[in-house]
Length: 411
Image (cartoon, rainbow, N blue to C red; front, side, top):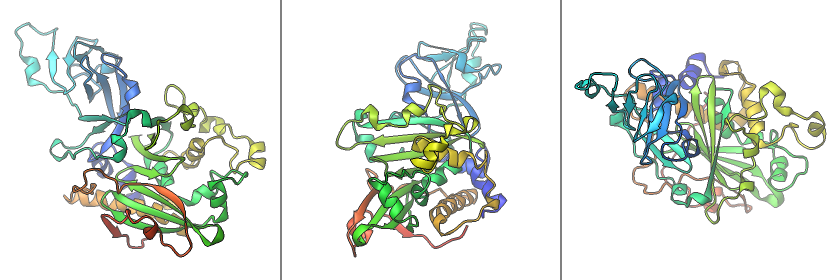
């Protein structure tokens, strides 16, 4: 179990909280590029870590991410006019550029220099992979945006989805860190492909390695004919995980507030373009980024399908995950749980976040990817049947950079 004070430490992320201070030191997804698709398109509301923001793409294509409420009297800028390289409030016409500069206060006298004394809250952004990423931390501590190898691929090789989660961000993140649930939550009784391997051994052995980017999590199952089925995932600080899906994906969980979060699934193909059929979760998500299957409609569970075809009777991996994490409650009280050997990776992720949040409170800088790397190729995910007698490190010799073993812990 996790004591209440430590649970609060890493699940509360409003401004000024230790957990919020930690997450704000990293680049996080704020919204999808498609939400503000072209210059002077309508703005988009963004809620992240309890902050109410508005995003817009100006006449020159530059992106602004501002505090949502006008400096003048607090009216929402979401309803503003996006025109002529600025966002103009509909109440009294105050206008802001992407950097938060006040360009115009037309209700003031013509000779007023009032606007020159003001600066609106704005945050830096980077657009890549179909996502607009934001940094909400101290400006003098802003890190460079990580150079992930997928960011060098053509846009046509990548895809991304976003959906609303009715729970704290950590519940989703912990699900990504847990390989043992693959033998149960996502099981199909057809026993084809990887399903057969997950059923062959439902109790994987874990090796956890502390890295510059977070944790490398290696789950090894017994495979057929004395092979080992090895699954490598990478927990990337502070709230993402590289996982081996049908190809490779980066799943990120961003707090909207302490009881709701956004899940982003970014996938890529190194050798071909992405196709619509590659994104099988997209039909499960409505135009407002809410899932069609929710706790309110019991995820449209089919008990007949549960008896005869799948372990859950719920359609699609996305909804399996959401059911498992949302039904824990809006913000799970981890002092009530009973952890086992299968939770080793989950424990390690929590410990990494706790240590980083406590260290930051003491003035120690949070862990970042190795500065000597140009492209962060050592942040990776993969899965394979490893021949008998061969260790996974021999099988993948490139996965030995910037490593430090993690001590066994029972958080």
